[in-house]
Structure formats: structure tokens, C-alpha cells
Image (cartoon, rainbow, N blue to C red; front, top):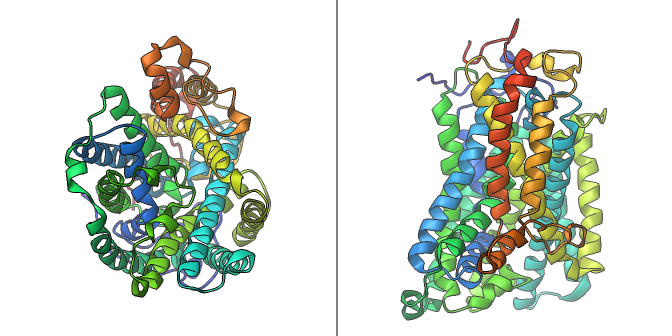
Length: 495
């Protein structure tokens, strides 16, 4: 298995300097780093205490026992992040951001459809993460007797949004350094938090948690997958595209999957334990603030750093990747300016959520999760295309930028598979977002006992994934055969 050692950082990607590469392929001279670095990026982004709420969902909404919760946490987390791991592998093979590589399976112009979906999702998630962090900071500061009301909210928001945008502007190398620090800091601080909360667990109630049927178990697993790995699939290659071609393929997949999975599994299981005695945790509009209850005063500041920082670590990746998506859509700007545009949209969204429409939080989150159906279908198409045609010979990198090139303007196989699978998946989910009230139109064909579980879970994401992958595998040889060879390109794994 090929390996590589970490080389010096190129001028285009240095810590505390603005990254100069955008969506262009990373040249061999600028490739650097090791697959292990992906551990820090993905662990920090998923180490947030908010992950505890997924465990509460399993108990309160899906009636799962401790054993089911443990199995669901492991299966849902690892399987969903394996998708991110393999998409990260495409970044090393193709030297370009995720949604640029997606042009191989959708065509240069046809790829605008999944890119727009991805962009809306990323901007939406960075908005909701910053809003959640702001509300958490406000609650904890009030517990400390510091400020309160609109002024406290405004100050917390300015600080959190400012840090997120500033680091996103600098780019890849700075994000890697910050995420490394975040991983160490939040891992260390989460341990005493869990120790202090241990006394709130009622193990008698934990032992007597009822077991759900298969439908409830599968629904819980699908919710974990929707909120974790599937929410990150459209960003995987963005953070691996700098790795040398000689890097270990297994290392790229392993360190991405392991780094992203290790913290959520622990936090989800801990959430199951806490929810046995506090089922309201699953329906809280401010779970971070509720988790602060009962903590000693001396630990509130470390808790504030951990809770808010974990959300910011996720928002950093969202705002960086959304900037790359904006460039992929054809906006002619330097990368850092695209991040500034996304930051402006995020600020506007947060002003509305935090100061004018706080009841907007739940519908907005429902909107984003429903978009996950389409991202799930997209990821299946991307992965099937990679395994069928790119895994051995790689991507013809420069052809990804011309609709007259090898990948064409529109790949009918990809577009049709996405539309059909999206229609099926959206027909099997319900959403709290008004714009998606029409979804769920296929649920009525199931027995009444299954309808509530299917509609209230994210099962439609899994079905959309399977349908998209199978359909693309059938259609691709018919419509996309000319896209498989890499004439004049650089084979994957070549030095």
C-alpha cells in the first residue's frame, strides 16, 4: 500500500495566510500532507455536545432500548461516514473539490442541479449551527449572571459569526490547524462534562427502556445517518484534494471515517443514558442550554467553550465548502470572496432567526433535513460512478471544466437517476418545513402501523440512496460510456 510523508506547505496553502487555490485542480507541486490529517478535520467537526440529542431521539421518538441505541449509534454513524470517507478518496484521485468531481457523473452543465442543492444545504447548515451556538452562549452566560436579552445575543452572535467567517476566509491549511486544536480542547473538556452529568443518569430506567420493533430501529438509524454522514457527503473531497497521489487510499477512507465517527458514537450512547430520565431533551429548542442545567458554576465557562466551539468547528467546514460550491456554480470570484458572500448570507439568516422569528428554527431544520434526501441520492450516483469508472484510472481533471470535453454538458444517466430517486425519497419523508408540506405522498401505500414511523424518520434518504445507485449503474453504460477513459489524463496513483 502506497504511503507518503508530510511535505512542506506550498505558498498557495499556508497557515494564517489566505489560500489561493479555488476550484482549480491542485498541481503536483502543491500537494502535501498525510491522510492522518483528515482525522483532525472530521473529528473536530463532529465532536460537538449537540450529538447527545441524537441519542435522545432514539429513546423518545423511536422507543429504543440501550442495546438498540448502541447498535444504532454504531451502525448509523459508521455507515454514513464511510460514504464521506470514499468521497474523500475521490478528492485525492481527482485533485478538485467535491462538486467539481461530480461533473464526471452529471456533465458540466447538468451538475448545476446537485451543486445548487449542495450550496443551499451547506449555507443552511452553517446558518443553523451559528444560530444554535449563539443561543447556547446566551443561555450559559445568563446562568453565569453575565448580561442577558438582545444585547447578549447580539454580542455572542458577532463573536461566533466573526470567528467562523475569518477562519473560512483563510482556507484549508488554517482550518486544518484550528481543527487540530479544537479536537484536543473539546475532547479534554467533554470528559469532565460527562463525569459531572453521570449522576443524572437513572440506570434503573435505562435498564427498563422498552425495545422498539424493526421499523423503529431502522427509523432511528436513518435519522442518525441523515444528521451525521449524509449531511457531510457533499464536502468530503474538499479536504483531501491536497494529498499527494501516492497517499494510502485505505488511509484516506479510514482516517476520515474514524475521525468523524469516534466522538458521535460516544455522545449518542451517552444521550440514550440521559434521555431515559429526561425524555424532554429530544424536543428541546435549546438542547445545549438544557444540558447546562445542574452543572456547577465553576464548569460553566469550560462548558461554554466546549458547546459553542463544537458547533463552530462544524460551521467552519460548511462555510469553506459552500464557498467552493458557489464558484462551481460559475460565480467568477477568488475563493475568499465567495466565502465572504456566504458569510453575508449566513449573517442575514441568523439576524432573522435570532431576532425576528425564533419559531423559524424547527421548520428551517426540517427544510435542511429534507434536502438530505437529494444529497443522499447524489452521493450514491457519485460513488457508483467513482467505483465503476474512476477508481482505477482517476479523473481527467482539466476536462471537468469544459462542457465540450470528455464529460460533456449533460450526463443523462446521472440527471435521470437523481430526479427519479429524489422523487421516490421525497415521497417517503415528511417535513416541518412549509415548502415541503407536499412531501410524503408515497407513505399512504404502506400499512397504517408503518406510516408514522416512515414519515417521522429519514428512511426516505436510505431508499433514495439505493434507487439512485442502482439506476445510475444501469443507465451509465448506455449514456456515459465515452466518459470512462482518461486519455491524456494522469492515472490515479501515478507519481
